[in-house]
Every structure is written in structure tokens, then in C-alpha cells.
Length: 84
Image (cartoon, rainbow, N blue to C red; front, top):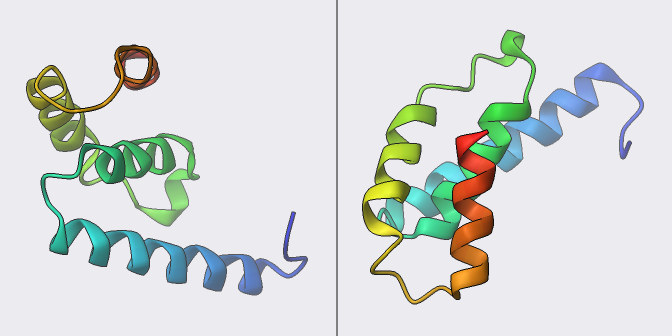
């Protein structure tokens, strides 16, 4: 949508992936960052080979979301989205 060229699209993806991975590396307990990574990894084409953390992130979120400071509505949304 924001780029026409496949190469430009890939470069946008690569930069976003690097930013997200860097943030998660610095904030490994951030449920929301891991949730964003789950959503991205569930929706990117397989050819991009970006799914290595999918199950680990899901498991981390499910194990820690109950004790998080997130609202109950947001917790429910996250659980529903990662479970489908």
C-alpha cells in the first residue's frame, strides 16, 4: 500500500522487522511488543521466513498476560487474536 516496488516493500519490511526485534531485545518482557510480533509473523508471506518466534511469543504471552497491567478488555483481545 505504501510502496509500489517489491524491492521497496521488502526494504520497508526489513527495516520494521529490525526495529521490532531491537525493541524486543531491549524489552523482552513487553507483552505488547511480543503481541505485535505475533501479529506480524502470522500475517507475512512464508517466503519472508519470519516465523521463528511465533510459538515462543504466544506461550510467553499466555503465561504472563494474567499478571500484566493491561486492561481486561485488551487482555481478552490479545488472547483471542493469538489463539486464532
